[in-house]
Image (cartoon, rainbow, N blue to C red):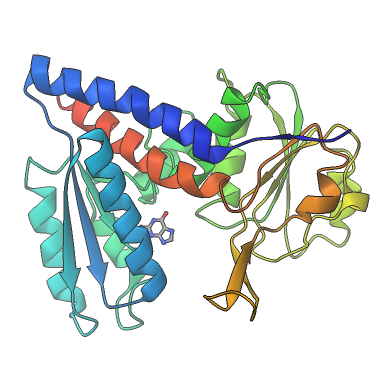
Length: 294
Ligand code: GUN
């Protein structure tokens, strides 16, 4: 079997087209423009790229966006004051503080300061808790995007055995919680494997769907999956490639070339989950704006 390629890029484009129409209607009929405030502290090159992508995505669909750049030596209190200012500013329906933060700033304190009603990253403990008990919450963008990729590629996880590899707070844990909800597009049997799992292949061999979010190349190899598996690769790893202009190549957590020979469907890196993450941020921001209509 040679796998169908699940293009996050194409799915993201169709969601953005839908959003663009929805936002145009919100503006015309409700006089409502969704707004996102992005805070970037310091000069981390990868963060600058991510923030640029978010800003571009907002512009594309018609979300008002402001990127607030603060110097590396910004005090924790100055950052918390800025967040509170955005919490109280009605033109912002979403607030995102780009991570990682400089070492002298307590990330937990920062996340806890963002109003849960504007926490479009879905990182605040109130949103994490709501997701866990099946209440309406902002879903973290990457796992929310993975769920959409499964649904929109015709691989509904309902009734399937999904194995998630990785237990981070940003991907693995919320992914598990999203897919086990008794809801449409979820309702899966979910197993979570991690660095403390002695033999991950014992579980992945039983999986109908594997979601790789371990942050290490070749975590999932062809011998670890069954024929007809569906694979979503969340990994983004830089590997040396001196022959390229940048000096590196991006690869996922999955041995793509070998696994695609066995899989029913597989997402690539790049062009897989990456474009979905920003798109789901745009979805969450629009959802937050709509909630102000009551
Ligand atoms: N840094 C890397 N990914 C993310 C993300 O999804 N949200 C935020 N705020 N920072 C990040």
